[in-house]
Length: 98
Image (cartoon, rainbow, N blue to C red; front, side):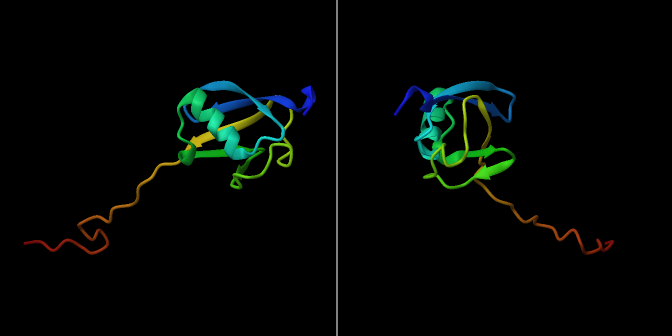
């Protein structure tokens, strides 16, 4: 590991927050997510990271293999767990007057 392997990753969040994470090019995406959680309290399992417009899905890819460099910018979204509740009323059928 050399000094050239140490990079600053610029993180932008959906709420407009911005911060930097110090990382190593040999860190995996999962390790980067843990550093983000430690700094900004976004839970690892809720993080969705996009880089160069593409979501990064492989937690075990290294930052080097994902073509990160010093001052690379990532966008951090928070996955919302939940679902869609079907309405109690069928809105497609006409309402019959009583």
